[in-house]
Length: 233
Length: 233
Image (cartoon, rainbow over all chains, first blue to last red; front, side):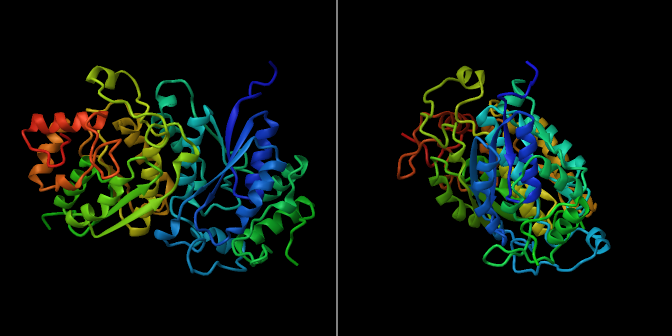
């Protein structure tokens, strides 16, 4: 057996963006049978969800689930509220503080559902495309958070407590620059044209080109020397 | 200031059962402004949710939210599936193994939403009525899990990372017997008649009297010497 991952199941968080699509492609390359998981949580860029099923299929996922819940009841984020998404900020502004697009405990909630799905599938491996480098503002994208979640997960489940499975949260993009992610996704054949990164797209799904996420994506493609098929003009 | 909790906000998980109602009453006694949180997750004993709003009001909660999502997509529990709820088991059978009524990662998901709600409210305190003693079968009801969740929570949120709030998960019932919980609830004036503990009630909400939860509740009331107003006959 040269590939210990062959036939092993993994849960892969898939938002429909560039990072999560690349992360799923990495999990596939490592030989995992990938079960994609997306969330409809009242995000204003809900259109990313329309892309997720086709992305999951084209990246070779074995299954795809969308869990629906509404974070708007709790409010307080530009991604779910009527707070304006900040536009045209430079790098210094982006890294100065936790941005208003931060959704409270979002990755904690996403990973908790992934943990439930993994336990049902008998999967020990969860893949998340979180990235700490380009976007240091979100507390739940940092390695310290991921390790603490992993420890908690192994106390939380029947499989963990019985010692049958040791949950591992894989975050292969966590310390990559956006340019490195673009290069990696390009090598792995990620269909960039089917991904959406914008926080504030128009109703047809065209990116705004000015939010933090659009700016970081454009810079990443530029630095990687790759053409972005969905670049806003 | 004799009461350091006075005016402080707490999120209180409220299922509509005996334990969570007693836990909310304890949080109130400690002086917290309590924001109750319930979940509609496809549970077959959904009728417990009908009781939760009235319970929250009568226990003096400042607000009450119900978050809806569907765990049936993941399946694999007698509480959400068509798997039969086990009946008439003795104590030895109950403690022998993790029961089929275990819902994968349920408390992890509940606490994750509580964490999001707490961050929005500016609350550092979360109350959960989990109990490890009478019901040792659920891994996510044990103190080790609660402590690991707390550690993770303080890495997860803007407030935690910025040092503004240190999240604390209060589990005042975790090492009490059911009889002790009944006595405590009785002292605090919990309206037991409005609570529902049964895993398999009839459509009118009458408890089955034979599932593990009904058996533990009946024994708890008997040992406490308190009459249960909703006891199955």
